[in-house]
Image (cartoon, rainbow, N blue to C red; front, side, top):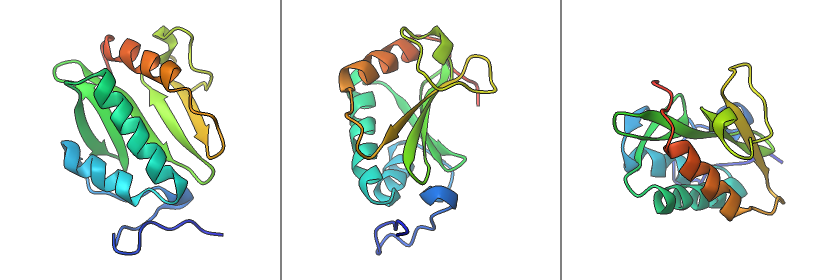
Length: 142
């Protein structure tokens, strides 16, 4: 069964159910992306966003390339996430510097991924620790 974004949103879902949201800086486009995430992924998006804000209160947000990005002014981006058909992929741009290193490898030497599936138990403590560590590293300059 195909996933849908909320009927009133008018947002197009791209391949894998990823919301097509216009590029923009700030919380508003990120919240629009999260609201348009299909099915269970929208609640996960809210939890991830809240976790990042709790962990890094001065976080900067944007939507780029149809994905929310999180960073700090003058330090670049440290985290992003993206919807796929069966999971949400977190991207830590300097992930090889995190302890423990997130499990998903990338063609980019420092980037690591962490995939979250619908029935996964979310270890918010582990994620908060990674977010805190990542926010203390120079990020990607996208």
